[in-house]
Image (cartoon, rainbow, N blue to C red; front, side):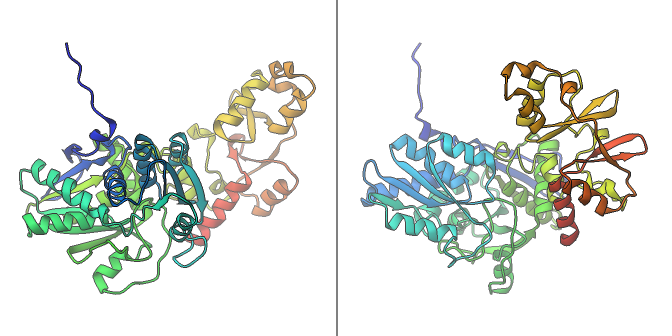
Length: 457
């Protein structure tokens, strides 16, 4: 029996379109196009092929050349993947809010990464787009891909994404909800639907802090803020972005974006990224505001497996203030990882030092409470293990009880905050107890997160 093979790059596009069935869509039918099913895991695979092949046709990209780009992540992953398939090197300038999963993925693909600040705007020497353009200017046999100004970017969506949606929806579409990072998706779809179905409304989903929704509504650029959603939202209007066809614009804050993406997974089983949460939240608001049924399309722009350490990580969500415990107005509020909820990483006195070492590494903690029968009987930190094994590695087999500290600094919830600071200043770990019940530990980062949240609210 003959076998058929498919080249990796031939798998880009023709992504599935599925209905949303378990979320409240008002009178509308809502569909989500799973761009997460592209081989690189995002919608950016489409534009990476288009921009690289355009540079090849124009003679700007020679064999063995280097692709240089400024990216919040997915365009970089797509360029690295396509570049690898075509024999190019890839150097990426990325803002420091990118998830660790994306960074690990990029490095595994062989991309060179230059990290820069995400809290500075255009014109600042560390602004990611300016840095990438300057780097390309001084790098021989390189091309600055420039997704923000590259006409091949919207062309890819006009040629592929738009026709796919039109065919999959049986030529019955009332609105498409998009975000804007570079503006390629919105621009390409605007061009396509103006040509084949001018009645289709383009709807903008924009993170709170971005200037684009305000520009659509008021015709002028406001002051940009900051946001944690990755890949969409800007502090300027990208050169290729055509916003003239946007019928409605919705501003979605980080909390709603993350909560909606998590709800999409919990109710529909779709693991999508943070920008997808923004798009879906805007699409749901649009659908629920309609007075008559409409058929609406939005996107799972990328896969949520790139955000497992962030918005799908309850601890990260607690630290950022997106998940909160009911406030008690005492020291209990400082404890984000609580023993009663199974959130505290612990160890038993009879476990080995090797087991303690493994938990330090696995959970990225530097100390562990030693718990027996629900009671804290000691605490062990990295220095305890180090001192025990430095002379002889076989001591990794010793028990935790042989080196743990039994000098415990416990505080009751009604103690003053200064008591926590005094314990930390003494190099100890505050252990919050509610009577005889172990609540949890308070680390320096817990205290800093608590103080930051008080300022935010």
